[in-house]
Amino acid sequence: MPRGQERQDDVPTHELRAAQNQDVHAPILSPMKVRFTPGRVRVRIDDLELAALHRGEPLRAHVGWPGGGWTLTLDPSGHDVAGDGGTLAVGLAPLLAQLSDPAQEGVTIGGEPRVTVEKDFGPQHA
Image 1 (cartoon, rainbow, N blue to C red):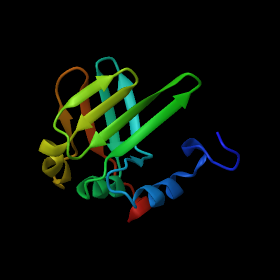
Image 2 (image 1 turned 120 degrees about the vertical axis):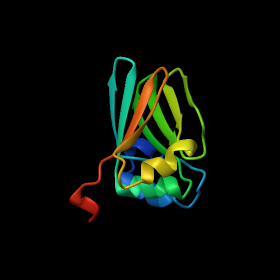
Image 3 (image 1 turned 90 degrees about the vertical axis):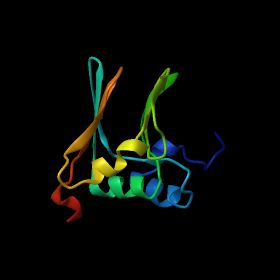
């Protein structure tokens, strides 16, 4: 890596959001909460992340380690759940309206793995 060039993992999340919001097609590195259990992935998003999805901005959570890593992307324009190696892409297009409904706590996409996306709106953005 050239001297003076920071890796994306070294940049604070709020700075990444500001930089990535310049390009609507670039996934936002998100602080969403992700939980794995056998056959299931549970994702919790906040109000700002839901607003980003409505603007058509994919959200991405990434954990890297030497020689590999894992990435989850919530894609507001996608229609399927697809995984390959250490990546999982979750298409939310058919469920975005339901996820946005104030009466709904979240949405679940069946299959392997079953993916649940829940709203986790706390007082931090009130």
